[in-house]
Image (cartoon, rainbow, N blue to C red; front, side, top):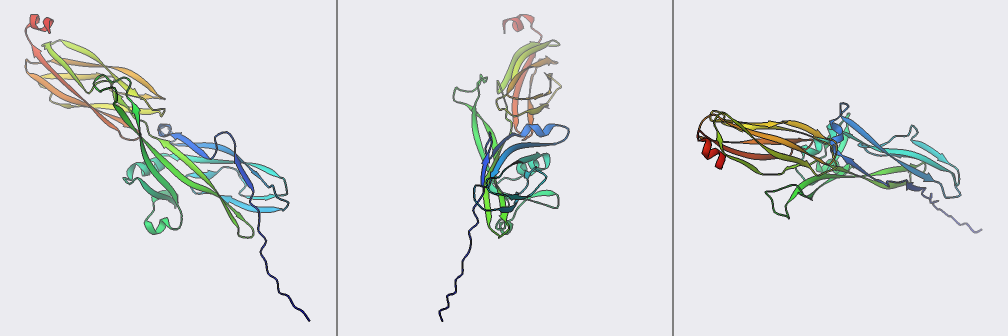
Length: 295
């Protein structure tokens, strides 16, 4: 008698996953988390097609902050069947604070017990969402103190993960997904403001422009540091917000109390991101009206 033992493994074909419009890359402006909810979700639609002649059963999952928005996570597709699935990215203040608090340019994050954390080297081997930090330089079109080649830095967080399709026979298919989070940036039209000689007791005003060259919404505030016994510097307004790339004209004023030099600086802080820009100010009082008119 002839006996032939044969073993084999049937390969399960992958489904065809395609993205509509925006592809598998999200692009989010960090400033949108300044809203009251502190959270924003962006959704992309993907299509999943069973192009084979087999009945395919699988589960779909991903790692936060990426998410599957559709209610179903298990799918059973007959040959030539196509389904549309919503997958998204959830940007929250918790996530952004974690990214801003890490100084490294390349690391992984995880989501456990309802919160995000930076993974250790040992934890990174088991998975996690990869984070890469980059910096882009943007032209400073409104600057008068800088040369023509001066640029302002704009930080970006690039997150990389995968949609994971696990078939009933244990076969796993992965589809890379990405998200770019852009932090707002800003600069001032001048680095310093010299008021020169000003008549004691009178207020002199000069304009300064704050510029947000990024597309991200931003909030900003300014505070003064310096002595006020010989003169008072003021800024109006001292806080504000941008919904997108824009600029605003501010009024900087100086009132001399004595004939001595007054100096100080306004410290501007942007949010989110915490970018800090300083504006140095100087003025001197005089009792000589003729000298003040000449200057």
